[in-house]
Length: 82
Image 1 (spheres, rainbow, N blue to C red):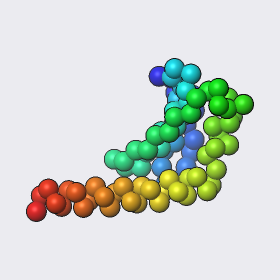
Image 2 (cartoon, rainbow, N blue to C red):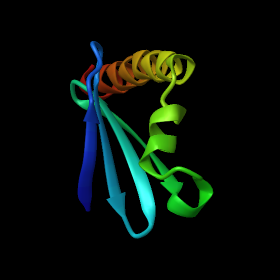
Image 3 (cartoon, rainbow, N blue to C red):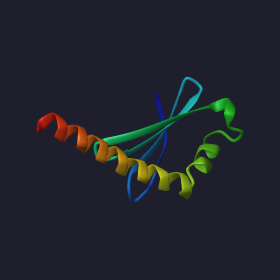
C-alpha cells in the first residue's frame, strides 16, 4: 500500500492510498476510521478524480457518520461495562 496524498481538514485526517489498482480513501477522527475503495478504472482522471469525490457534501456526511459511530460505540461500551 502506497500513500498518494494527505488532505488537510480541520475535523479529521484524510489519507489517499493506492493498492492493487484501487484508490483507498481513509478518513480518521480520533480512534474512529472510515475507508472507501474506488477502482482506478472507474475514475477518468486518476487521483484528481478522487479529490473531486471528496466534496463538501460528502465530508459533511462523513462527519455526521463519525458522530453516529461514536454514539454506537459508547452505547456498546456502557452495555459491556454496566
